[in-house]
View 1 (cartoon, one colour):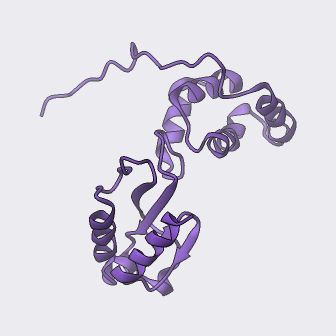
View 2 (cartoon, rainbow, N blue to C red):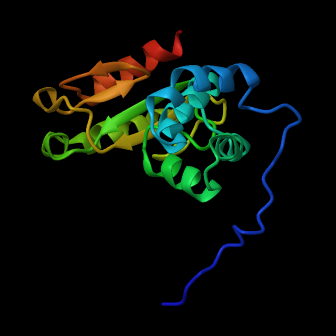
Length: 176
């Protein structure tokens, strides 16, 4: 198999005129997080959380700004952000449906839940509806094995799901 290379070293990062990592955010990180850690690298996860909480996702420009602010290599920041499922590196829908695919949910037919979501929303796992309302993802474990199959709709946990129950949860989210 041949290696497929990407021009990431020369890739242009879309830039907006104002920074994502604002002076207020930097001051908050300096005061709250940096004193807690021996090195600035320790403050990376809280910085990424702050960015995501503010914008709903973390644009590449924001990753570069975080690297610069924390005096880290951009590759280290990008590797960290892309490693954790909780960080969004592209915009997501207003509502996120996260179906658990752990072993307990697999035994309890999580696939039927995912399939119903795909049918109802007209999207595949990892996609967002054209209207920007819903994003569908599967996560490795939601830690609610006793109620399998489970899914999060936004931040509300739904346990012992059937396809009809996930339909109702989607309709409820749509009405808000």
